[in-house]
Image (cartoon, rainbow, N blue to C red; front, side, top):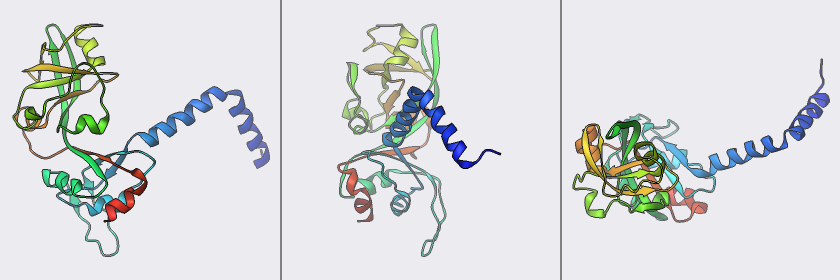
Length: 231
C-alpha cells in the first residue's frame, strides 16, 4: 500500500509535470469565484434571506435568484417562488447599493432570413448595462423610455450577430424575429452571446408573466457587503 508520503510526492511530481495546466485550472477557479455571486432565497421583499446566505469573494455584482428560505432559530422558513418589483425596490433602499435590475429570462428562437438559432432572452431594466459593465461594438443600449413601454428593441451579443448575419456585419437598424415577433436591433455587445430586450417587452409580449427570473445588483463597496445587508 502507498503511504501518505509517497502520495504527496506523486501528487507534487504530477503538478510539476503539468504546470501550465495546473496554473490554468487555478486561474479558472479564481475567475469563477470572483465573477458573480449567486444568492438563493429572496422573494417578495424577503431581503433577510440575502443576509443569511451572503458570501462575498471580491466582486461588486450579485445575482439574486428565487428559492427556499433558510430555516433556523427564530426563522419561520418557507418557500419564496417568485421575485417581484418590490424586491428590487427593497434592495435599492439599502445603503452601499449602486444599481439594481430585475431580469425576466427564457429560451426563444431568433431568426434572420434563412438563419436561425435558439438563445436565452433576457428582459432587463435600464441600469443592467451599468451593472454588467457592457461594452458595445455597434450602437448602444436600450434607451430608458423603451424599458417600460413594451418596445420591440433588442441588443445582441457579437457572437450571435456573426451566427445570424455573418462576420463583420453592421446590423444596427436591422430586424430579426424572436419567437415569431419582429424586433429592431439597436446595439451589439462586445464578446457576448447575449440577447437583451426591455423588461416590459419580456413580461407582456414574450413570456406572459410579471415576476422576475432573477435580480442583478451592483454594490459600491464589496468589502462592507455583509454590513450593508445587515443594516
